[in-house]
Structures are given as C-alpha cells and as structure tokens.
Image (cartoon, rainbow, N blue to C red; front, top):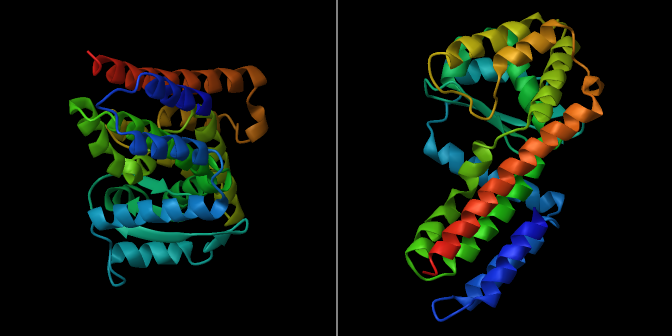
Length: 279
C-alpha cells in the first residue's frame, strides 16, 4: 500500500504543472511516509481525536441514563484487558451499531443495546475489545492516515477535483469509525468475544444468538457495515470453530488477497480521478 501511495506522489511530482500546490504536495508525501512509522502514542492520539469527533456527532448517554448505567455495570471489571485500557460510552440513537478505536474507546449505539440481552451485549463488547487487542483497529489508523495522504496529494491540484478531494480530508475520524474488517479479522474478534464470554462464566450460546439477531436485522436493512456476514459467523461458532488457528493458510491468503484487491481498486480510482483532472 505504501509503495502504491508513494508511486502516486511520484507521478504527481513528475507531471506537476502550474495548478499544482507544491508545498501541499510535499506535506502529502511526508504524510505517506509517516503512515508506516506511526508509534503507539501517535496511533492512540489519532484514535482519541476520532473518538472525540464521533462523540461530538452523537448524543452520549449521561451517567443517570439506563444505557450508561447498564453499560457501566457490564464493563465495571473490564476497564483493562490484556494490558490495554478501555473506555465505554453509549449513544442515544436507535441505530444498531458498535465500534472500537485503537486508543481503547468503545462506543455502543442505543439500538444495539435494545436488541441484545446482557450476555449477548457482553459478546459484542468482547468482539470489539478483540479488534483492539488483535491490533485490527491499529492497522485501520495506518491505512486511513495513508489514504488521507493520497487525498491531500489530489487536493494539491488546485482545480475542481482537488477541491472535492480537499473536502474529504476532514473525514479521517469517520473512516476509522466505519472501518471495514476482513473475514479473518472478524473471525479473530468473534473468537476473542467467545473467550471473553467464557472468562465471565458464560458459554458461546450468547454469541450465536447475538449474531442470529444481527442476521435477522440485516435482512431488513443495512446495518453494522464494518461487521459483515453475521449468519456465516454464527454458523462457524455453532460448529465449535472458535480458535484462531482453525483457518488454513490458503483461506488466510485468500482473505488477504481480497482485501488487497479492494484497496488497490480504491487507489486506482483515486489515480484515475487525478488523471482525468489533467484534461
């Protein structure tokens, strides 16, 4: 991904003309390099800014609200998991969703809290914690940072396309909140969620019923775009496949290839948009 990003900037510099903002282009190239060298402190800071942005766009349940009271009760013993600190908030919305960020911020939407019983909600929380512990969300910060560098490079072209790209730079936090996960990452998070349930004295049944509820909801409308295929995931858990080691090397390679192709297509689209702006 980094090589592709740097290639974009190299092409942009080679074809730079009067409508290219060179200082902004330089900043964009620097951002691309920084993307793979982000230390843990930088990743946490960026994730915290994304959490603050998301909290500012939603009504956060106050301490005396039933959502917050319930969430604090369920997470009282889980402020730290595997050496990482977590903070939990509920949003006052009927939307069914949840997300985690690399700084340990976990947000649960009111619609999801209404849909799940306590044990099912614990599985969802464990799933989100798993995305943090397994560093899935950390990778999303790096990718979003690199993507913002591409957009900044496009924005360096002072024309209509550049203006549109420039307007997207502020969507960094939204990219993290709505980050897509690969099938392998989802399986890992599910396995962690089941282990989380077992650690507090429950079995995998609640995980299966939670995923069935999400599958039923998915048939009605779009939801949890960052958590695909709940029916297939429930079937996997029902079959007792809860180990990270169960995935064959071939299936992992296939999942990685699909993810790489998706990201490459997005990058090609960005390059094509820039090339069209030259004519």
